Length: 130
Image 1 (cartoon, rainbow, N blue to C red):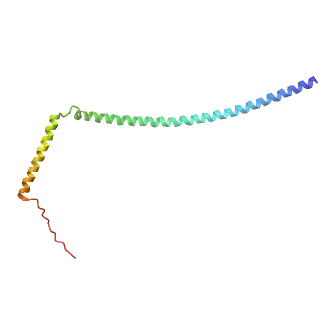
Image 2: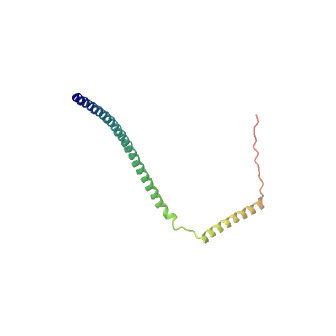
């Protein structure tokens, strides 16, 4: 009986070992497929990021060119804008000259109105009627 018991224990142990081995093989296959899918996903993401980097590099080049053009234009405008602070006296003199010109124009209009009068003369056009 001892031999039968030993054989039964050995068979049980061997069956358990075979079952564990089969489970390990299956787990390894699943892990391998999972890792391969992860690798494919990572490669796809890398190619997408490479494209985005290329686009961003092109955007940076264009933005740099635009900035350089704006800076050049700003440098061109600086001499005309800087140091041109108009004093209050200058602004007041300019305003007074403008008012004097307007008063002169008003006086000319008033003088002309007194001599001629503002009468609208209408021109009659002969219209042919059919």
